[in-house]
Image (cartoon, rainbow, N blue to C red; front, side, top):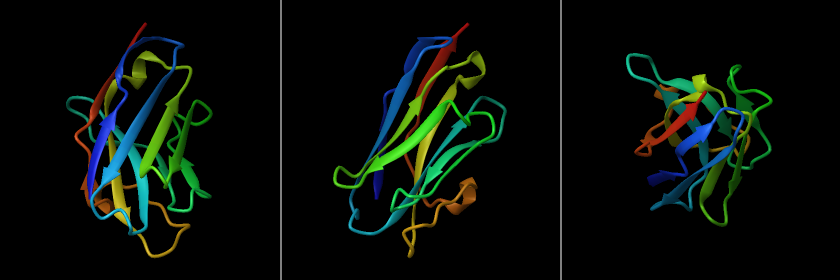
Length: 126
């Protein structure tokens, strides 16, 4: 499966952005999806994950209450709505996918994902 992330950009602190990740290829399989972010010199940080069914979600502590992950399986797309953005949210954001065999599964560790998008830069100015 191929993943294409988009929606990044420059926004002022307190603003909002919505990232999208479109999947193509073997999309008839069930995939859990995740968002991670990374800044230079740091490890990739878990942001959010969602199960194939969409019923189960998980968020990193630093984004809880501000970010919302969702998906539209008919469009093979997962979204990350980011509100109340802070300067520390500045990073390259990556979407990831991993095949699952139960609709309720998701993953929060980068090594658990096999497929990755190219990343989209989010810059929050303070």
